[in-house]
Image (cartoon, rainbow, N blue to C red; front, side, top):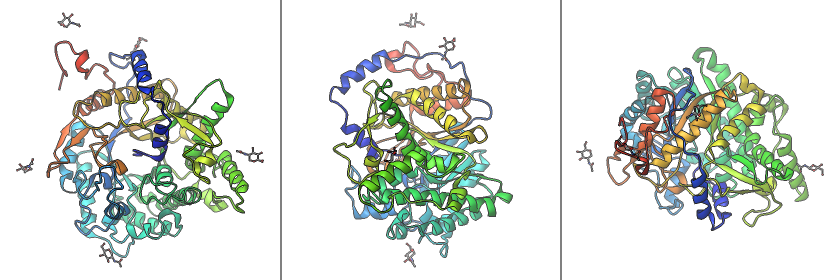
Length: 528
Ligand SMILES: *[C@@H]1O[C@H](CO)[C@@H](O)[C@H](O)[C@H]1NC(C)=O
Ligand SMILES: *[C@@H]1O[C@H](CO)[C@@H](O)[C@H](O)[C@H]1NC(C)=O
Ligand SMILES: *[C@@H]1O[C@H](CO)[C@@H](O)[C@H](O)[C@H]1NC(C)=O
Ligand SMILES: *[C@@H]1O[C@H](CO)[C@@H](O)[C@H](O)[C@H]1NC(C)=O
Ligand SMILES: *[C@@H]1O[C@H](CO)[C@@H](O)[C@H](O)[C@H]1NC(C)=O
């Protein structure tokens, strides 16, 4: 999840103080839905729930695990997280994974998305040293899942790069791609009998923008003009390398599917009647999503033309003799094109956009400055949780349609929503999260049934509260709460977990299943 990303905080800065009164207005005018959705999720539609290793596992130095860059960085910079916390214990899934599997079973979902910690199985990052205890840890989890008829979907890189590679520049160093390929091969050999859906990298846009082009995530390189594009370029190449390696060495036997997780906001033109705002909305999507999706999913491949032109033009104006956005060779364009067996989309929020040559928080050169788009929250979108998450459920439907309209291949390969969820500050009675899932999943039903979008799966983020990157333990995404003050890290179901289980069970949305106290008459929380 992208949590308090750079984008998010910048949007927050732009908000006006009159926001709260506008919010009341927005809520007052919101359509209150009740009843059961007329549409249902098709029989072959997969429901799931997700987590990532660093955010939940803990056990940072147990069982022969090496350090990830998040372990090392948070130990060296204890004030990096807002609550000065780290991921040493997190939700302690390293010890409580059997309990977690019980929670997954209770939800009734068909699938579980998790990630492998690269340094847990390769403590030094390299394949000369395979940690058998780490190997067994994931094997046990995967076997338990398969036994319970829960399909594992496994992310290879969910941001926890082995520290030795961070010290060599992380994804700015193209040589790291070789070692990522070696790691992926080890994982395919170890677990390919059990895992048939693999995800190479999680949200490279977010990790490159905030981790390399900024200081929002580790390694906080703040290389805003250059590092971010090297990271983007090498992340894409790393994905293609692993996809082609699997295709050649494993797919004939293992018959699995491989993709990459791309997150995106939806962009609404600030004034839909202004052509330049409409263009800004399209351009921002190309700079955020197209920069990754076009090389992989479009017919012609390579970076989108507008992205290439924007960075080239700005680089030239700034006196560079080469573009800050590297070029692919013809072989690389070919390797990337079609390197996905499904489209894995993460979505959390929408932004309202208009063109801008400069904003006070932009650095020069930088990705934002190259992009030339001012982002704001729309005051009519509710924002009941974190400062950055604007709730605009129709944006989700529009984003799915945008993908379907831009990439013809999505008629043949399916879209899987790999993450979607609501961020708040805790509490078991999470009515806002219940509403979030009802409203966003309803838009998904409309996208499937009324627009013909080829969406075949949905993973709620997240199974449980975790370390939310830089936000530490102050922000929560879980369907289950975790008591981070208890040595047992006790898990407790939130209302949203019952609601989600009901959607999974009935394959419809019952807007009355969980009612807010003010909407209750006599019987509370029926069926719980
Ligand atoms: C179901 O369909 C009816 C008739 O079109 C409509 O009025 C109602 O709002 C729909 N309900 C839901 C929850 O989709
Ligand atoms: C490999 O990692 C282990 C555990 O972190 C460390 O003790 C050891 O020094 C590393 N070896 C090399 C060659 O880097
Ligand atoms: C880049 O510069 C060229 C030449 O000045 C111009 O025609 C083109 O519109 C510019 N592209 C973008 C996306 O700004
Ligand atoms: C933790 O779990 C153990 C074993 O189930 C139990 O005995 C103990 O009381 C629990 N401690 C807390 C603080 O919940
Ligand atoms: C509450 O429930 C009772 C009994 O079912 C019913 O008579 C009454 O009209 C309800 N009140 C409201 C405000 O819906």
